[in-house]
Length: 396
Image (tube, rainbow, N blue to C red; front, side, top):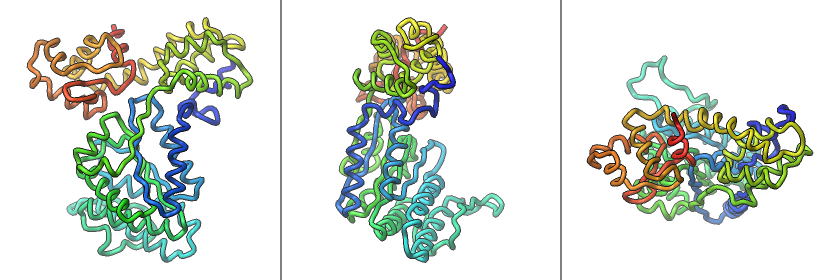
């Protein structure tokens, strides 16, 4: 069929297939928005799950929901080599601009922008030369004595409080969305938890919505023991069969085309119900189909093309980040699990490789920092990427 009309191509369609089956999460966030707007306390939200389940797309939709409710909203992606101040300043600048449209007191908005600028400027090192100092692009004079102590925990509490008060002025709230939250630096995680704790105590209308890998609850708990009371965790998993079929059929039907039931069976078997894979196999099947409807033969013909694309863009790009020692560890995991999406015992990996467990700790820790594996539970390790073990066993 016409590749130009392919509804599975990146950016195509009105509703990404990753959002199929996420109605529960969307309704829950709707309740959060309503409760906070009415001055009732609500916990911040953290979405956890493997890569490829659509967390980032869902996070983007939650941001859009907040904006539609008149909230200020900003979104960032955490990076392991970057401190929080700079991206957070840009995100909250965007949120304040959203609120400024509705606020009737420009001086009040400028006051909060001044606090934000003071917070942002602390991202510069004290010994940085003038030409190297970052300017946040906030058109307001920096405040003095507020959110500028240099202690991220103190400053973040003060900044969140002032931004939340600005939202309260117009009867709405602020949503700060953080993707890859497990990549925040330890001090930033601690500061974020402290700020969320302060907000929960005061009932301020600001919520944090994070998304990250399955071990995020452990990361937050290790930072602050009370973090389990601050966040509501929602596990995002692969789609059930009915929702997976909807993710395929809805975009196809929007193009006035069809797909045979046997082809749906084949697509589900190939994708495992993971939204990212559904999109990859769906795109390839559409391009391979010579006519409407898409048949099981079309899916079979398209499968190698989809697998080749995933091997390069989804699996291969991650595998290339690993060192030879780390790759050895990954392949051992794949061998022990026979390519299945299940955890392997860390002791079993050591036995398989004929090494002492302590000698493998550096490789395992680096793989965790790179987001390729996570500790499923004590003494076990699992891939963060679905079907990664199968991919590793299939490499030449």
